[in-house]
Length: 364
Ligand SMILES: [Zn+2]
Image 1 (cartoon, rainbow, N blue to C red):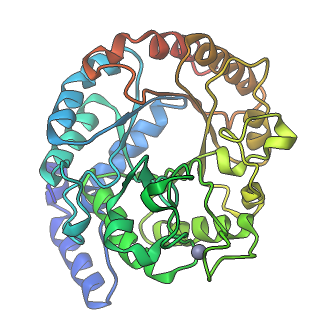
Image 2: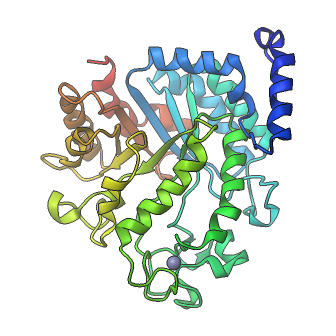
């Protein structure tokens, strides 16, 4: 934990407080977040950033993290005030070193990035995909390699043939015993006050191959999993949570595809989760309207419209969302996802970032 000059006077009382937490058996993984200086920074950030202009980018190693850090000033100049770094298993996990990917971001680099981001006025938010995306093509990610008993479809689909991505079982109580320490480490290392939990494109949930889940309502299974994570991060930690929105949207009612909305029954979770969760509502194709944006806001959720490419789709989503904000203040701004389509050094000039953000240069 770093100590800012302003924080030194309060250092002793903080030390006592931390000691009491340990004595009480409470865990604190807040890192810098718990310092008065960080809270003041966050309050200042919120006061000056009523619109969230975001970038989502994947990090696999220290080299990529340092490259991104060098771009912070240019990204700031392009209007970015929030960066989501999707890390998943590419981190130097100490609670479960067996779950580190072959290449990873070290905790020291994460702390350095966090400091640089704050200096630039950028809010840095780590991401770890929960439930779904536990494999990609033939590669299964570390959790289900090391703990195959946590798989929603254990022993099924050899070499991942016939499925999109593996999922972990939402009802196995052993999952959170492994995963929560990983998430806590990311929050601590990135000195984060928010965490993106992923949860997009979950197709394997309530599988007939899972003894715990078969026959159960997918919407309730998803809601229970989200609420369990929310309980962990809202109790004492005060970490804001973000999710991709697709599993919370009814594809049939909204006219979306099975990718950007759910046809597998998970959408009823929307009525069963806390309203303080930020929903990243992603759509890529150009459409006349994006009905989920005002729908989510009217239900009381903060909505962060998230685009990618093609450029006309990204601009259409951003402009539509900007119009919605006139009457729906819970529409937060615009999040530019990259998905490897632009080099880090060229991101600040990428048309799919620059053009959609143009309409968000003023809050109203
Ligand atoms: Zn299950």
